[in-house]
Amino acid sequence: MVDNCIYNIHYTDRSLADALTIKGYLLYKFTQKEVDKFYKMLGVFESLVCSFPKLYPKSSKSKNVRRAVLSKQLSVFYTESKNTIIVIAILDNRMDTVKWP
Image (cartoon, rainbow, N blue to C red; front, side):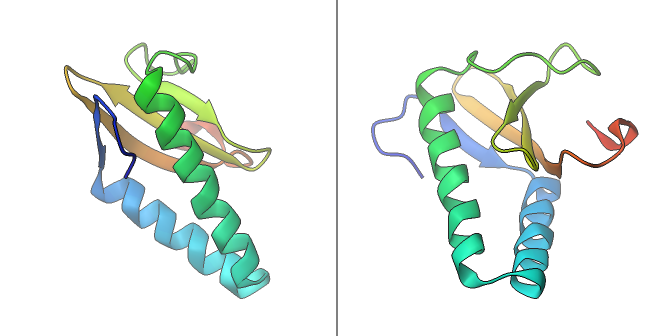
């Protein structure tokens, strides 16, 4: 979690499951180093979205959902409410867009 953030960041069950799936894949195919890099990217995302919740563009599938592209392979989908950033999904960019929230 980010210190001095005016927004609470909430991960949905789906986004947590996505993160665990990505972690498992990285450990299977690569090393702990890539897992650490993945979590570092999520930390940077939290810091940025906490300060600038409208930084990332709205998704082409839904007007209320924003898509943050963290790397060539990784996107985070989120919405914002009064004091909360809700992370809906963490997806591989190579997936079919039908699976996007």
